[in-house]
Length: 394
Image (tube, rainbow, N blue to C red; front, side):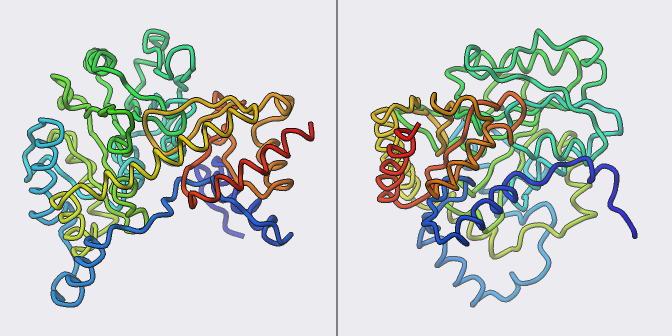
Protein backbone atom coordinates (compact mmCIF):
# COMPACT_ATOMS: atom_id res chain seq x y z
CA UNK A 1 0.00 0.00 0.00
CA UNK A 2 1.23 3.51 -0.85
CA UNK A 3 1.45 5.70 2.27
CA UNK A 4 0.96 9.44 2.66
CA UNK A 5 3.91 11.76 3.20
CA UNK A 6 5.79 11.73 6.50
CA UNK A 7 4.84 15.36 7.10
CA UNK A 8 1.13 14.68 6.62
CA UNK A 9 1.31 11.67 8.92
CA UNK A 10 2.77 13.92 11.64
CA UNK A 11 -0.50 15.84 11.80
CA UNK A 12 -3.26 14.85 14.21
CA UNK A 13 -6.85 14.60 12.94
CA UNK A 14 -8.16 18.05 12.06
CA UNK A 15 -9.73 19.61 15.15
CA UNK A 16 -13.17 20.21 13.66
CA UNK A 17 -13.26 16.77 12.04
CA UNK A 18 -12.99 15.34 15.56
CA UNK A 19 -15.76 17.64 16.76
CA UNK A 20 -17.92 16.58 13.82
CA UNK A 21 -17.57 12.94 14.89
CA UNK A 22 -18.91 13.87 18.34
CA UNK A 23 -21.79 15.80 16.76
CA UNK A 24 -22.60 12.90 14.45
CA UNK A 25 -22.80 10.54 17.44
CA UNK A 26 -25.09 13.01 19.22
CA UNK A 27 -27.39 13.26 16.18
CA UNK A 28 -27.55 9.47 15.99
CA UNK A 29 -28.75 9.46 19.60
CA UNK A 30 -31.52 11.87 18.52
CA UNK A 31 -30.05 14.67 20.65
CA UNK A 32 -30.99 18.26 19.79
CA UNK A 33 -27.49 19.57 19.07
CA UNK A 34 -26.63 23.20 19.81
CA UNK A 35 -23.46 23.80 17.80
CA UNK A 36 -21.07 26.35 19.35
CA UNK A 37 -18.00 24.65 17.91
CA UNK A 38 -16.66 25.92 14.58
CA UNK A 39 -16.51 29.67 13.94
CA UNK A 40 -18.87 29.34 10.99
CA UNK A 41 -21.24 32.34 10.80
CA UNK A 42 -24.89 31.27 10.88
CA UNK A 43 -26.25 34.54 9.46
CA UNK A 44 -26.63 34.85 5.67
CA UNK A 45 -24.38 36.97 3.50
CA UNK A 46 -25.94 40.46 3.16
CA UNK A 47 -28.55 40.55 0.40
CA UNK A 48 -26.88 43.22 -1.75
CA UNK A 49 -23.68 41.14 -1.98
CA UNK A 50 -25.63 38.03 -2.99
CA UNK A 51 -27.55 40.05 -5.60
CA UNK A 52 -24.29 41.34 -7.07
CA UNK A 53 -23.02 37.77 -7.38
CA UNK A 54 -26.19 36.61 -9.13
CA UNK A 55 -26.22 39.58 -11.52
CA UNK A 56 -22.54 39.16 -12.35
CA UNK A 57 -22.76 35.42 -12.98
CA UNK A 58 -25.89 35.84 -15.14
CA UNK A 59 -25.02 38.97 -17.10
CA UNK A 60 -21.23 38.80 -17.40
CA UNK A 61 -20.13 35.36 -18.64
CA UNK A 62 -16.53 36.53 -19.03
CA UNK A 63 -16.31 36.33 -15.25
CA UNK A 64 -16.63 32.52 -15.59
CA UNK A 65 -13.15 32.32 -17.11
CA UNK A 66 -9.85 31.87 -15.29
CA UNK A 67 -9.11 34.98 -13.21
CA UNK A 68 -5.78 36.68 -12.70
CA UNK A 69 -3.99 34.69 -10.02
CA UNK A 70 -3.11 37.78 -8.00
CA UNK A 71 -6.58 39.30 -8.26
CA UNK A 72 -8.31 41.47 -10.84
CA UNK A 73 -7.23 45.14 -10.91
CA UNK A 74 -10.60 46.38 -9.62
CA UNK A 75 -10.39 44.12 -6.58
CA UNK A 76 -6.83 45.19 -5.75
CA UNK A 77 -7.64 48.87 -6.24
CA UNK A 78 -10.67 48.56 -3.95
CA UNK A 79 -8.59 46.89 -1.24
CA UNK A 80 -6.08 49.75 -1.40
CA UNK A 81 -8.83 52.36 -1.08
CA UNK A 82 -10.47 50.51 1.80
CA UNK A 83 -7.19 50.12 3.70
CA UNK A 84 -6.39 53.80 3.40
CA UNK A 85 -9.88 54.79 4.55
CA UNK A 86 -10.02 52.25 7.38
CA UNK A 87 -6.44 52.30 8.69
CA UNK A 88 -4.71 55.26 7.01
CA UNK A 89 -2.35 52.78 5.34
CA UNK A 90 -1.18 53.47 1.77
CA UNK A 91 -0.56 50.54 -0.59
CA UNK A 92 0.38 49.98 -4.23
CA UNK A 93 -2.48 48.09 -5.93
CA UNK A 94 -0.18 46.60 -8.55
CA UNK A 95 2.38 44.99 -6.26
CA UNK A 96 1.20 45.09 -2.64
CA UNK A 97 -2.17 43.31 -2.74
CA UNK A 98 -2.81 39.64 -3.42
CA UNK A 99 -6.26 38.01 -3.63
CA UNK A 100 -6.64 34.79 -1.63
CA UNK A 101 -9.03 31.86 -1.62
CA UNK A 102 -9.73 32.73 2.01
CA UNK A 103 -7.05 33.85 4.44
CA UNK A 104 -6.50 30.31 5.77
CA UNK A 105 -5.21 29.28 2.34
CA UNK A 106 -2.96 32.32 2.23
CA UNK A 107 -1.44 31.70 5.65
CA UNK A 108 -0.79 28.06 4.85
CA UNK A 109 0.76 28.82 1.48
CA UNK A 110 2.93 31.56 2.97
CA UNK A 111 4.70 28.96 5.09
CA UNK A 112 5.23 26.76 2.04
CA UNK A 113 6.62 29.72 0.10
CA UNK A 114 9.13 30.71 2.77
CA UNK A 115 10.09 27.69 4.86
CA UNK A 116 12.86 25.20 4.31
CA UNK A 117 13.05 21.91 6.24
CA UNK A 118 14.33 22.68 9.72
CA UNK A 119 13.34 26.35 9.71
CA UNK A 120 11.57 27.44 12.87
CA UNK A 121 8.17 29.11 13.04
CA UNK A 122 7.28 31.06 16.18
CA UNK A 123 3.71 29.97 16.80
CA UNK A 124 1.29 31.39 19.39
CA UNK A 125 -0.04 28.71 21.72
CA UNK A 126 -3.00 28.55 21.90
CA UNK A 127 -3.40 29.60 18.29
CA UNK A 128 -5.29 29.03 15.06
CA UNK A 129 -4.38 25.47 13.97
CA UNK A 130 -3.27 26.40 10.44
CA UNK A 131 -0.18 28.10 11.90
CA UNK A 132 1.31 24.90 13.29
CA UNK A 133 -0.26 22.51 10.77
CA UNK A 134 1.20 24.34 7.77
CA UNK A 135 4.60 24.51 9.47
CA UNK A 136 4.61 20.74 9.89
CA UNK A 137 3.50 20.19 6.30
CA UNK A 138 6.39 22.38 5.12
CA UNK A 139 8.88 20.32 7.12
CA UNK A 140 9.50 23.14 9.55
CA UNK A 141 9.83 23.12 13.32
CA UNK A 142 7.49 24.80 15.80
CA UNK A 143 8.55 26.92 18.73
CA UNK A 144 5.61 27.66 21.01
CA UNK A 145 4.91 31.22 22.14
CA UNK A 146 2.75 30.81 25.27
CA UNK A 147 -0.27 33.12 25.34
CA UNK A 148 -1.06 33.45 29.05
CA UNK A 149 -3.89 35.28 30.75
CA UNK A 150 -1.48 36.97 33.16
CA UNK A 151 0.31 38.54 30.16
CA UNK A 152 -2.95 39.59 28.46
CA UNK A 153 -2.41 36.75 25.99
CA UNK A 154 0.57 38.52 24.43
CA UNK A 155 3.74 36.50 23.73
CA UNK A 156 6.89 37.42 25.67
CA UNK A 157 9.42 37.84 22.88
CA UNK A 158 12.28 38.35 25.36
CA UNK A 159 12.06 34.72 26.53
CA UNK A 160 12.85 33.16 23.14
CA UNK A 161 16.33 31.55 23.25
CA UNK A 162 18.97 32.89 20.86
CA UNK A 163 19.46 29.38 19.48
CA UNK A 164 15.84 29.49 18.28
CA UNK A 165 16.01 33.06 17.00
CA UNK A 166 18.94 32.17 14.76
CA UNK A 167 16.76 29.60 12.97
CA UNK A 168 13.41 31.38 13.11
CA UNK A 169 11.87 32.36 9.77
CA UNK A 170 8.27 33.37 10.56
CA UNK A 171 6.29 34.61 13.55
CA UNK A 172 2.48 34.40 13.56
CA UNK A 173 0.35 37.00 15.32
CA UNK A 174 -3.42 37.37 15.44
CA UNK A 175 -5.37 40.15 17.21
CA UNK A 176 -8.28 40.21 17.90
CA UNK A 177 -7.18 36.71 18.81
CA UNK A 178 -8.64 33.34 17.99
CA UNK A 179 -9.19 31.51 20.29
CA UNK A 180 -8.44 33.67 23.37
CA UNK A 181 -10.42 36.74 22.11
CA UNK A 182 -7.59 39.02 23.36
CA UNK A 183 -7.10 42.44 21.76
CA UNK A 184 -4.24 44.93 21.51
CA UNK A 185 -5.13 48.07 23.45
CA UNK A 186 -2.54 50.27 21.69
CA UNK A 187 0.31 50.00 19.20
CA UNK A 188 3.12 49.54 21.73
CA UNK A 189 3.27 45.76 21.38
CA UNK A 190 3.27 45.95 17.58
CA UNK A 191 6.12 48.48 17.72
CA UNK A 192 8.05 45.96 19.81
CA UNK A 193 7.29 43.29 17.19
CA UNK A 194 8.67 45.44 14.36
CA UNK A 195 11.96 46.01 16.23
CA UNK A 196 12.16 42.31 17.06
CA UNK A 197 11.52 41.22 13.46
CA UNK A 198 14.13 43.62 12.06
CA UNK A 199 16.74 42.59 14.60
CA UNK A 200 16.41 38.86 13.90
CA UNK A 201 15.31 39.01 10.24
CA UNK A 202 11.97 37.29 10.86
CA UNK A 203 8.84 37.58 8.71
CA UNK A 204 5.70 38.64 10.59
CA UNK A 205 2.49 36.96 9.44
CA UNK A 206 -0.25 39.14 10.92
CA UNK A 207 -3.68 37.51 10.79
CA UNK A 208 -6.30 40.28 10.99
CA UNK A 209 -9.39 38.19 10.24
CA UNK A 210 -11.44 39.59 13.14
CA UNK A 211 -10.50 43.28 12.90
CA UNK A 212 -14.09 44.35 12.20
CA UNK A 213 -15.80 42.16 14.83
CA UNK A 214 -15.25 44.39 17.86
CA UNK A 215 -17.35 45.87 20.66
CA UNK A 216 -17.64 48.79 23.10
CA UNK A 217 -16.05 51.19 20.64
CA UNK A 218 -12.82 49.23 20.43
CA UNK A 219 -11.11 49.69 17.04
CA UNK A 220 -8.63 47.00 16.01
CA UNK A 221 -5.43 48.19 14.32
CA UNK A 222 -3.57 47.07 11.24
CA UNK A 223 0.00 45.91 11.74
CA UNK A 224 0.97 48.36 9.01
CA UNK A 225 -0.05 51.32 11.13
CA UNK A 226 3.32 50.93 12.82
CA UNK A 227 6.30 52.59 11.13
CA UNK A 228 8.54 50.00 9.48
CA UNK A 229 5.98 47.20 9.64
CA UNK A 230 5.74 46.88 5.87
CA UNK A 231 9.46 46.05 5.76
CA UNK A 232 8.97 42.93 7.87
CA UNK A 233 5.36 41.78 7.59
CA UNK A 234 2.46 40.46 5.56
CA UNK A 235 -1.09 41.06 6.77
CA UNK A 236 -4.06 38.81 6.04
CA UNK A 237 -7.72 39.80 5.82
CA UNK A 238 -10.81 37.64 5.37
CA UNK A 239 -14.35 38.44 4.19
CA UNK A 240 -15.64 35.36 6.05
CA UNK A 241 -16.36 36.99 9.39
CA UNK A 242 -17.03 40.62 8.49
CA UNK A 243 -19.59 39.91 5.78
CA UNK A 244 -20.70 36.33 6.62
CA UNK A 245 -18.95 35.13 3.45
CA UNK A 246 -17.25 32.08 4.97
CA UNK A 247 -18.32 29.73 2.18
CA UNK A 248 -17.35 32.17 -0.57
CA UNK A 249 -13.62 31.69 0.10
CA UNK A 250 -12.22 35.13 -0.49
CA UNK A 251 -9.66 37.24 1.32
CA UNK A 252 -6.39 39.01 0.60
CA UNK A 253 -2.84 39.54 1.74
CA UNK A 254 -1.02 42.86 1.71
CA UNK A 255 2.64 43.69 2.10
CA UNK A 256 5.82 44.98 0.50
CA UNK A 257 6.18 43.74 -3.07
CA UNK A 258 9.36 41.81 -2.29
CA UNK A 259 7.81 40.01 0.67
CA UNK A 260 4.51 39.30 -1.11
CA UNK A 261 6.14 38.06 -4.34
CA UNK A 262 7.10 34.56 -3.05
CA UNK A 263 3.50 33.94 -1.94
CA UNK A 264 2.18 35.11 -5.32
CA UNK A 265 4.70 32.90 -7.12
CA UNK A 266 3.85 29.86 -4.99
CA UNK A 267 0.12 30.31 -5.55
CA UNK A 268 0.60 30.72 -9.29
CA UNK A 269 1.83 27.12 -9.47
CA UNK A 270 -1.11 25.75 -7.47
CA UNK A 271 -4.28 27.71 -8.21
CA UNK A 272 -5.87 30.24 -10.55
CA UNK A 273 -7.04 32.55 -7.81
CA UNK A 274 -10.49 33.65 -6.71
CA UNK A 275 -13.33 33.47 -9.29
CA UNK A 276 -13.93 36.87 -10.84
CA UNK A 277 -17.62 36.96 -9.91
CA UNK A 278 -16.67 36.45 -6.24
CA UNK A 279 -13.99 39.15 -6.42
CA UNK A 280 -16.53 41.60 -7.85
CA UNK A 281 -18.96 40.71 -5.06
CA UNK A 282 -16.16 41.37 -2.55
CA UNK A 283 -15.57 44.75 -4.20
CA UNK A 284 -19.19 45.66 -3.50
CA UNK A 285 -18.85 44.43 0.09
CA UNK A 286 -16.00 46.89 0.70
CA UNK A 287 -17.47 49.86 -1.20
CA UNK A 288 -21.18 49.73 -0.29
CA UNK A 289 -22.69 50.96 2.96
CA UNK A 290 -21.15 49.25 5.98
CA UNK A 291 -24.44 49.27 7.86
CA UNK A 292 -24.61 45.52 7.29
CA UNK A 293 -21.36 45.10 9.23
CA UNK A 294 -22.74 47.16 12.11
CA UNK A 295 -25.85 44.97 12.12
CA UNK A 296 -23.77 41.78 12.14
CA UNK A 297 -21.60 43.04 14.99
CA UNK A 298 -24.73 44.06 16.93
CA UNK A 299 -26.08 40.51 16.65
CA UNK A 300 -22.85 39.12 18.12
CA UNK A 301 -22.83 41.76 20.85
CA UNK A 302 -26.38 40.87 21.82
CA UNK A 303 -25.59 37.16 21.89
CA UNK A 304 -22.37 37.76 23.82
CA UNK A 305 -24.07 39.87 26.49
CA UNK A 306 -26.95 37.45 26.97
CA UNK A 307 -24.81 34.32 27.07
CA UNK A 308 -22.01 35.71 29.27
CA UNK A 309 -24.53 37.08 31.78
CA UNK A 310 -26.34 33.74 31.84
CA UNK A 311 -23.16 31.70 32.22
CA UNK A 312 -21.97 33.80 35.14
CA UNK A 313 -25.40 33.55 36.75
CA UNK A 314 -25.29 29.75 36.76
CA UNK A 315 -21.76 29.73 38.17
CA UNK A 316 -19.57 29.44 35.07
CA UNK A 317 -17.22 32.43 35.23
CA UNK A 318 -16.69 33.83 31.71
CA UNK A 319 -15.35 37.24 30.65
CA UNK A 320 -16.82 39.49 27.95
CA UNK A 321 -14.51 39.76 24.94
CA UNK A 322 -13.85 43.04 23.13
CA UNK A 323 -13.35 41.26 19.83
CA UNK A 324 -14.21 38.14 17.78
CA UNK A 325 -17.46 36.20 18.13
CA UNK A 326 -16.02 33.68 20.58
CA UNK A 327 -15.96 33.13 24.32
CA UNK A 328 -12.77 31.70 25.83
CA UNK A 329 -13.77 30.06 29.05
CA UNK A 330 -12.02 27.94 31.69
CA UNK A 331 -13.46 24.48 32.14
CA UNK A 332 -16.05 25.04 34.92
CA UNK A 333 -15.01 24.16 38.47
CA UNK A 334 -17.00 20.94 38.91
CA UNK A 335 -15.23 19.43 35.90
CA UNK A 336 -11.68 20.76 36.19
CA UNK A 337 -10.44 17.25 36.90
CA UNK A 338 -11.22 16.50 33.25
CA UNK A 339 -9.15 17.52 30.25
CA UNK A 340 -10.75 20.04 27.92
CA UNK A 341 -11.39 17.25 25.39
CA UNK A 342 -12.95 14.98 28.02
CA UNK A 343 -15.17 17.85 29.16
CA UNK A 344 -16.23 18.65 25.58
CA UNK A 345 -17.06 14.98 24.96
CA UNK A 346 -19.05 14.68 28.17
CA UNK A 347 -20.90 17.92 27.50
CA UNK A 348 -22.14 16.94 24.06
CA UNK A 349 -23.04 13.43 25.24
CA UNK A 350 -25.08 14.71 28.17
CA UNK A 351 -26.50 17.99 26.84
CA UNK A 352 -26.10 18.05 23.05
CA UNK A 353 -24.00 21.24 23.30
CA UNK A 354 -20.94 21.19 21.04
CA UNK A 355 -17.97 23.43 21.78
CA UNK A 356 -14.25 23.27 21.07
CA UNK A 357 -11.69 21.96 23.59
CA UNK A 358 -8.79 24.32 24.18
CA UNK A 359 -6.21 21.58 23.65
CA UNK A 360 -7.09 21.70 19.95
CA UNK A 361 -5.35 25.09 19.77
CA UNK A 362 -2.18 23.97 21.53
CA UNK A 363 -0.97 22.72 24.90
CA UNK A 364 -1.47 26.13 26.55
CA UNK A 365 -5.14 25.93 25.60
CA UNK A 366 -5.63 23.04 27.99
CA UNK A 367 -8.07 23.87 30.76
CA UNK A 368 -10.16 26.07 28.45
CA UNK A 369 -12.92 25.70 25.90
CA UNK A 370 -13.97 27.98 23.06
CA UNK A 371 -17.61 28.77 22.34
CA UNK A 372 -18.65 30.35 19.05
CA UNK A 373 -21.66 32.67 19.07
CA UNK A 374 -22.94 31.29 15.78
CA UNK A 375 -26.42 29.98 16.40
CA UNK A 376 -29.86 31.59 16.64
CA UNK A 377 -30.38 33.91 19.63
CA UNK A 378 -33.05 31.67 21.12
CA UNK A 379 -30.65 28.74 21.26
CA UNK A 380 -28.52 30.47 23.87
CA UNK A 381 -31.49 30.40 26.22
CA UNK A 382 -31.83 26.67 25.59
CA UNK A 383 -28.10 26.17 26.11
CA UNK A 384 -28.18 27.97 29.45
CA UNK A 385 -31.05 25.80 30.70
CA UNK A 386 -29.12 22.66 29.77
CA UNK A 387 -25.86 23.93 31.25
CA UNK A 388 -27.54 24.92 34.51
CA UNK A 389 -28.90 21.40 34.88
CA UNK A 390 -25.56 19.87 33.84
CA UNK A 391 -23.52 21.90 36.33
CA UNK A 392 -25.94 21.15 39.17
CA UNK A 393 -25.56 17.40 38.70
CA UNK A 394 -22.01 17.59 39.93
